[in-house]
Amino acid sequence: MIWNGIVNAVNGARRPGEPPLEVGPLPWLGSALAFGKNLGDLLRGCQQRHGDVFTLVVAGKRMTFVLDPLDFPEVLRRVEELSFVEIADDISAKAFGHSRAVEKQMSQEAVHAQYSSHLKAANIGALSARMAEELSLILDDAPGGWQPGELFAFVSRCMFSAGTDALFGSGVAGADALRAFQRFDRQFPLLVAGVPARLLARVERSRQLLAGLVGALRPDASAFIAERDRYFTGLVSELDKQRMQLGMLWAAQANTIPAAFWTLAFVLADRHARAAIDEEIAAAGGRFGKDELKKMVKLDSAISEALRLSSGSLTIRRVTRPFVLALESGGRHALREGDRVCLFPYLTHRDPELYPEPEHYQFDRFLGKQFFKRGKKVGFALMPYGGGVSMCPGRFLAHEEVKLFVAMLLDRYEVELLDDRLPSLDQRRAGLGILPPLSDVAFRYRRKAAARATAVGP
Ligand code: HEM
Image 1 (cartoon, rainbow, N blue to C red):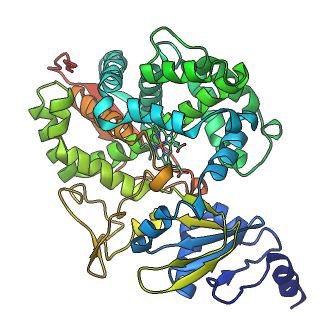
Image 2 (image 1 turned 90 degrees about the vertical axis):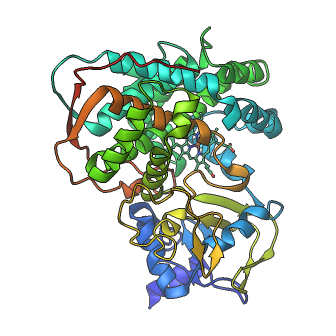
Image 3 (image 1 turned 60 degrees about the horizontal axis):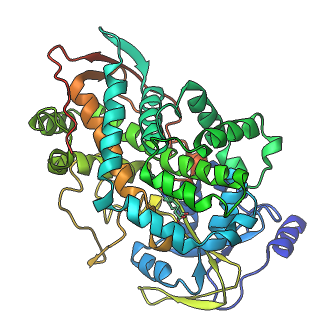
């Protein structure tokens, strides 16, 4: 009784017109522990008690979750009342260790214009061709005979090496860089939660090593990274420039590696998917240029299906002034200035109304399909890349990189899982993007006897 009184006094009360409030079991922390353990389970429980909109207290913040995908467009549209900039700046400074001054020195418009000119679907040709060349070098460099391995470790090596060198230039992604990246990425949830880097074992050293590597512009860096370098040089300190490039390294790798892992693992574990995708790859005749990749529509669908099942991204906005959010179903909810409004597509991706048998992997689920809820078409049925102003600008490149990797690997190698049971998702990373596996999977691979040299066409 007394405890409840303390929790309520610290965590506050629901005001008229506001969404149902879950104060959580602890003062100030609220539901923080359950949030960090398994966000999907926590939200499912709240949804059963309160419906699709409710507010949680998490580490002193009020977070309102909007779970009906038919309401996502309204949340993403209200850019005046729901802002992203402060959220992004805060996460970026904590995670990458740049000074807060950067936010005032750089222009969001300029940085987004760079995304647009280098990462839009029509403009990724050179980056994609470079990625294919890098992958080709890595895949050619394997010894003969069956090689045993761990799948996530293998995918991490290939994707980190090829993706990083394609962006930043040859030689950036050595074994030391991968180790430093993995150490940094493991501690990422704690950094974002506000734990100072100096309190986390060796994380500052890893950040420094990586920032030094990607912050020094190489002559063969991509045009995108060269333009970022030119933009930040002189505008911010040298240290801050390096940290901004570190931010791009993390954004480009942290989700793409687990996305490639899940796409490959699901295909390998499902013989129908494997047969259909092998057929598409064989039809490409060893060429993986733009035209050949475009024809691999089943592989496109398999990538989307893997992202559906593994994405744990969270879209967060901060309420800039009190307003009433009108729902598609007719409900209205008052929101306070400073509240966070959050979308968690993990639950949408498991909604049986959109996806029958949602836990079942079905590689061709996205082949030309549309998705409906209460008879209405859902625009945000699949949302691994976020949405609205914060939608991932690297999504076209990410998709192409995963596609190239899976197609080129299965073209040149026989690959077999040694255990068909795939691991669970690591739920502790919910909110940060694609969830990695909780444990690795044993597999083996061997160069195909009649391997052709893969031609990398434009
Ligand atoms: C499968 C791979 C990827 C996934 C699932 C993914 C997902 C996401 C998500 C969900 C966000 C939005 C975060 C938010 O709303 O707070 C985001 C942002 C971002 N992503 Fe990706 N991403 C991927 C790959 C990439 C790649 C390859 C690049 C670059 C080469 C990239 C660059 C970025 C950048 C720069 C942002 C921040 C955008 C901003 O400041 O508004 N991403 N990504």
